[in-house]
Image (cartoon, rainbow, N blue to C red; front, side, top):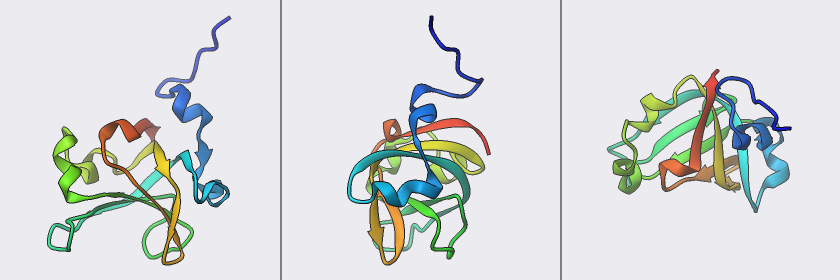
Length: 118
């Protein structure tokens, strides 16, 4: 019998590690889920990064920051900072530490999935 997931949930969302437990996945590829609470596009900064802060806002070090470099923005049909703000997402990539904060760098829209509203 096939299990039905709640509206807006996918298998990736359901199986993902919650953002508060992301440190247990540091150094490996994983799918992390959580609410995107703040976003910013820094087009004048070297590399023109977009930051999606999951779980907590900058500068709270408990957050997980999803980084999308400027060279990859054109792969997204909508501006990532607008498309994912306020949404629960599941992000797949390598979890790493950057200056005391967990981050995941993603290169394509296939690495991030909307699970529902935050």
